[in-house]
Image (cartoon, rainbow, N blue to C red; front, top):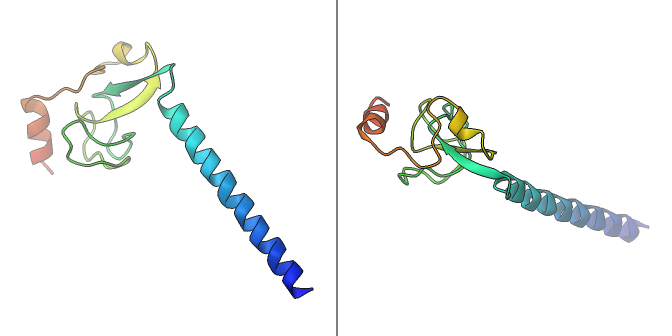
Length: 103
């Protein structure tokens, strides 16, 4: 009886891990699907989608200032250029260097 319970627990764990992996893959695909685009310059601190364009970091949630031109977020196509400060390309200029030095 004990081995049957152990087997059931192992199977339940395997199903949970498999489901989580599938969900993570789906979320990654949805983040930059065909109907999405990277939008730079509109991200709030800590809300960026992934690594910065200037390679200062490689992870989501590490933006340190609001509106940095090197941080991006995934938005529906056509939305970015309608936003104040929004750009489809990284904004690598003196303004961004000044913001990163304020930290």
